[in-house]
Length: 367
Image (cartoon, rainbow, N blue to C red; front, side, top):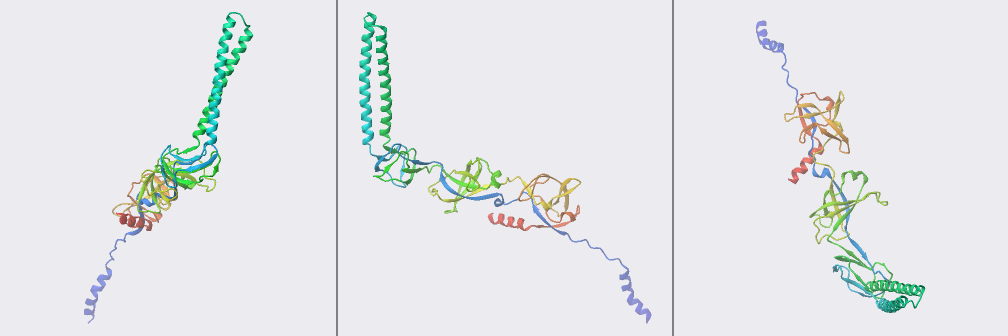
């Protein structure tokens, strides 16, 4: 009976003496990101601006007077040299007539003085008069010459003022404003109309000082109207103010629209997208960088999921993290959390961060 019991328990005793087989630990999850693969939206700074014309001319008469005619309306297309309005020209015409009369009188005095001088020279050659009498006639002749030049110059000024009774367009464009009507007496230089050149449309944007380092003249941008978000316009930064606006404490930047059309109207609201980060820059979170013996290092996860320590060189700090100037290539995967607990050659299970997953989803949706 005891022998049978022993035989039954023998397999159990033998199995109890065997050592347990050690199983390999499962790969450790590791939070990672792919470097150098930011979405287009990450590199953009979108600011709101107002459409303006590069050339907005406020035109007015150069002399005072009463408006007699207004020949254009708001919205009218005008050409350079086209008459926009006129003022009463009676006074200017009378002044021109008076100037012409002065010229005739000066010319008569000049002819008389010249003839008298010629006679006095003949008498002086025959020694009938003294040298002082000849000098007197020469002085009178020079005075008549100067007087003739003076009245001719005054006549030219008066003639110009006669032409100033017509207000003409100084450039091609569209009449945006009319600020005076026939019958109104206006002063010299008072604004009568505003001409907008729609051939040179640009966007005025206020850029905060923290973003000024990303901008430069000639930089390409994208422009979209709030009235029509379906169409995108190409633009370039034309002008950057050297000083901040005293009211907004921001810098006024003018972006020239390269392909304007009839949909662009002065005063419209537009969004301007500036590219603020070069695509070749590699930026990683500060949590992904570690330091050993004075060397900056990161954990690179290869395609097989193996963690390898790599020495890199870092650059400037910014809002996104730390710029890596050398040691990493775009598309490589680095660990961004728990880097102090990894071991060189360790098998890990890469898990993309939430932001990286969002970028990947956005890119796939765009494709």
